[in-house]
Image (cartoon, rainbow, N blue to C red):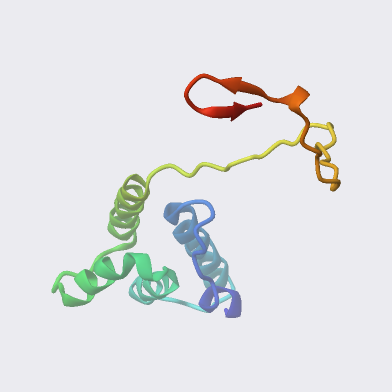
Length: 127
């Protein structure tokens, strides 16, 4: 019973699997003569979802029609898909450094010599 009430959807997997896991736990509890109604399970499922689904939670609470488990699963799966499309694809950036050592610059100041520079026409010195 504790695992059922403490379940929270963390974004891994999908909402359908999360609610199906909750239904599975309820069926196990029902086999142990701990009966949980479907309407209570709907409320547990709604409370286990993150704030991203807040609009649908409000819609459920305002509507006169109470949703069953199948309708709840389909509506929240559609909302999850909409949120994923809205958010876009995730891209992981991988930076690979090859085994070459970084160039080291000497800390000695260079001496100016006329051999290292030549005169450019209207501008001055150029290396």
